[in-house]
Image (cartoon, rainbow, N blue to C red; front, side, top):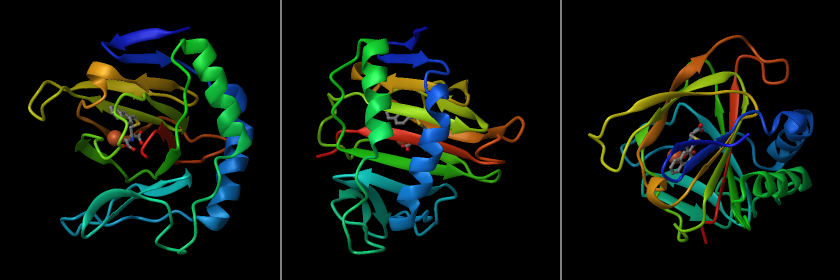
Length: 203
Ligand code: MD3
Ligand code: FE
């Protein structure tokens, strides 16, 4: 079941549901080496969503700006490897979507509690803007804001549910987007929170 939501944006609702338990175990495991942290943005504010990363690079932010780093500034060590279940899921996503081959070198893992949000922004720190971005929503439902190529373009609200997979490329790749808030009931694995995996080719 592949839905086209915009030019360069498709959704595969619930595609990751069969992987939910294995994904939750893999995330909990990699948090031992790269725990959740609330990064500081250049303005000095602390992000309300917490983050971790795995793969060859990880997204970081501090007073100097946003960038990708081969090491976790909190440990000084490399990021945890991409867990096998992440790779299995990506293979399945490539098959079902016809978007491939998917060869991301990083997965940014966002955690939202009931108070977290992510303001409207663009993702433009990745070196390879041709490679699609794949996002996997886990846990509680979120209101996703889908804007356009400029900050002032109209914004649509989409609901991201547990197990939903979205793929962005081409004309949608630099669109503004964000998370307004979480909604709906708690989730059996993630409680009142939500986790989002975004796979990118950053290097
Ligand atoms: C559209 N995360 O990590 S996922 C982010 O749910 C981010 O955690 C949100 O925005 C979340 O940067 C939204 C959907 C997403 C991710 C990256 C995109 C949409 C995107 C990059 C370009 C266009
Ligand atoms: Fe983003």
